[in-house]
Amino acid sequence: MSIEKIVDQALQDGYLTPAMEAEVGRICDTASELSIEEYMALDRLMGALLTGEVVAVPRKQFINVMEELVLTEAIARVAEIEATSDRTLDLGDIAAYALNRLPPLYATTEEGANYQRQHAKEGLQGVISQRVGEAIAKNLDKPDFFPERQILGKSSKDEILTQVSSLLQAYAPSFEPEPRR
Picture 1 (cartoon, one colour):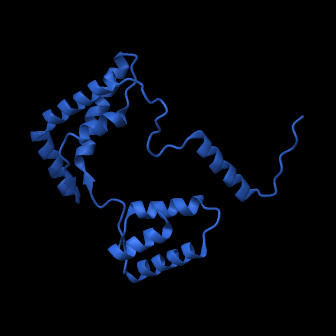
Picture 2: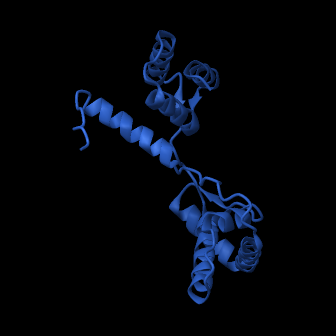
Picture 3: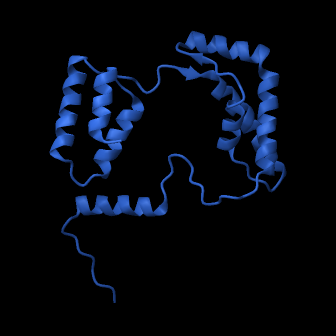
């Protein structure tokens, strides 16, 4: 999505979400030069943020306590399996599989989170253990079809080289390497 479309959406909704903010940042970081239209859109967004016409939604005003509970269970079970076998399991895949099969338990305060934890330990611990077990079984049976898969948030070697090269060009534009002998 372009900066202009993101700004138009933010102005229409009255909110700038973390995803919108991240996309604007990504565009600004990767573009060698922004167009006049992009600068004007960013100026409109800045003005709307300053006047309160658009509100930036904080990254996290709530937590899903179920994520914490599933990760705790999954880490313990995966560590046990990896310690007693030569298998390596994907904790992220296991947690995501289990979480997709469990109810979310959101909270906005520490008191609410404590309540949700207690509620889950009393009524859902067995289901959490069962879903994590199913996720581990699936992960153990998973063939390695797509070894080229990239984990979310991880950069490829080429992207990292490009970023390092850009940094070097920005900070040392007149540097020329010595010829190799």
